[in-house]
Image 1 (tube, rainbow, N blue to C red):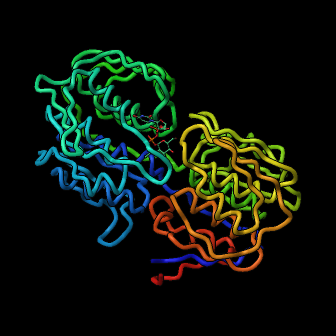
Image 2: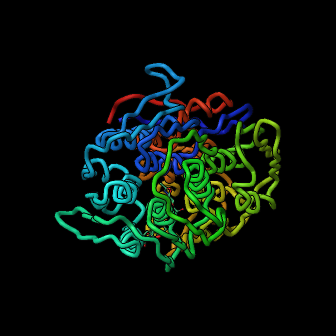
Length: 428
Ligand code: UD1
C-alpha cells in the first residue's frame, strides 16, 4: 500500500490546475445509458472512481473510448456509446467499490424496462440508505423488489411522470430521478430537490441530449419526459471540492496559489467562513487566486448543509485548518452520521478536539507536530494532508488509496507549489 510523507512548515506558491468534478462526472457517465447515440464527456478527472464507473458501463455493453488523448494518457475525454445494452445487471463487486454505481439503476430501467442493481451497503461515513432513490422510482411506476442483496426493478410499460416530494435533500436521489424522468411518459415534478452545481451540470447535459427540464438550479425541477434522447458533447464543471480543499491548504500553510479553472461562485460558503481570517480570494482570468499572508486564522463555527450551505465534503478539511486557529471553532456535521473519523488522527498530530454527538469543538493550538496517521475515507485523508502541511516534522499517511479515489495527482500538485510531499510506493 502506498503512503504519503509530508514535511510541513513551508508556504505554498504557484499554480494548481483544478480537475473536472468527480461528483458531476459520475452521474454524467451514467446518463450515457439513456441514449443509443454517443455521449462525449470532456474534462473528466483521472481518478479511480471514474475508471470504476467506466468498467461498470462497459459490462452493461457501453463502448468506452478515450478521445483526443492517446493510449495510456489520462482519460480527459471519453466517448460513451450505449448503442446496445447487453446486461441490465450491476454486480455487487462494482457497486460496493463505489456507491455512485447505484445511479445506473434508473437509466437502465428507463431505457430497458428492467434493471437489477446490487444494494451498495454502508461505507466509512455512515449507513447511507437508498430509500429515497427506490421510493422515487416507485412513484414513477416501477415495481421494485429486493432479492439476494439486489434491487430488482421493472417497468414493462415504461416509467410514468409523477410528483416526487423528497422528505429530505439528497444529491444522488435528485440526480437519479432527473435521469429516470427524462424518458418517462408525461411530466415529473421534483420538490425539495438538491441544487448542488453537479445537479445543474447533469441537467444541462440532459437538456443537450434532448431532455426537457425547467427550474434548473432551483429546488423544484420539472421534467417533461421525451420518447428518446440523443447524443451530445458536454464539458464537466471544475471540482468545487478539490478547489475548496486547496483553498484550505493555502489558508493553513500560507502563501499564494492560483487555482486554475476554479470557480468562486461554487464555493461561496467556504469564502464566507474564511472571510474573517486574513485570506484573500479573487477571481482571475485563469481561475481563482488565494492568498494568506502572515496573519493568524480566527476560529469560525461551521455547520454542513445542502448546497448552497457549507459542503460536508469540506468538513474534514476545514477542521484541519481550525486546529491551528486563534480561539475555538464548533464544527457541526448535519449530513452524515459518522463523519468524524479524522478526529482521532488529527489529535495524534496534537489537535485539541472534543466531539459531542454531531458537533466537534476544536480548540486552536499553537502548532501541530508530525506523526504517523491513517486515512479512513476520501475527505478525511486529505484533511490529514492539510494538517501535515502545517505540522512540524514528518507526517506519514497510510491508506492513501482513499485519496486516489478523489484527488488527481495530489502530491504532484502540492509539490509543484513548494510543499515537501512525496508518495512512497508499496510497503505495509
Ligand atoms: C453525494 C456526493 C458526496 C456528498 C453528498 C452530500 C456523489 C457521488 N457523492 O453523495 O460526495 O458527500 O452528496 O453532499 O455525488 N439519504 C437517505 N436516503 C437516500 C439517500 C440519501 O437517507 O435514499 C441520506 C444520506 O444517508 C445522507 C443524506 O441523505 O445522510 C444526504 O445524502 P445524499 O445527498 O444522497 O448523498 P450522495 O448522493 O450519496
